[in-house]
Every structure is written in C-alpha cells, then in structure tokens.
Image (cartoon, rainbow, N blue to C red; front, side, top):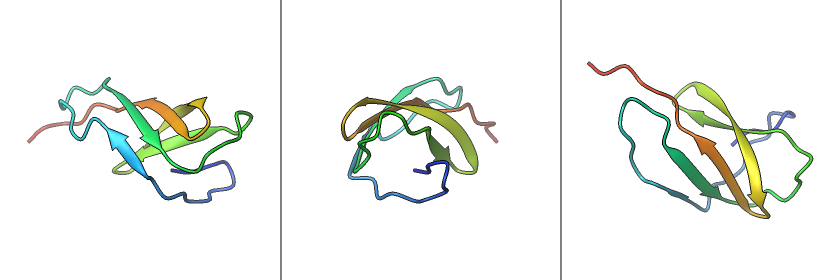
Length: 69
C-alpha cells in the first residue's frame, strides 16, 4: 500500500484472495491507515489503482484486469 509520500504499509488482511483475470473485483484491505484526507493506492503486480478509506483501518479498491497467457 502506498501513500503520496511513497510510504509502504503492512497489510493485516485482504479479501478476496483471488480474482478473475478480467479484473473489476472489489478488494477490501485491512491495515494501519486512518487518515481519510490521504490519497491511498494499491499495487497489483506493478499496476497502481486508487483506493478509498471506507472506515478506519479498511481500504477498498478494485483489481485491474490482467492479460492471460
């Protein structure tokens, strides 16, 4: 998990544990984030997607699609 300052945070847990390659699946991630005013993002492999703080300690993002093969 990255913030604008490029700090890395430790993930406590996440769900779901897998996704279809088409992407678009909602991912909930728990960890130490607390500040609603921060711009959070999640990294899937090397793809960054925006994340929203939905309550203290819980981020929501949507996984990107991935080419199969």
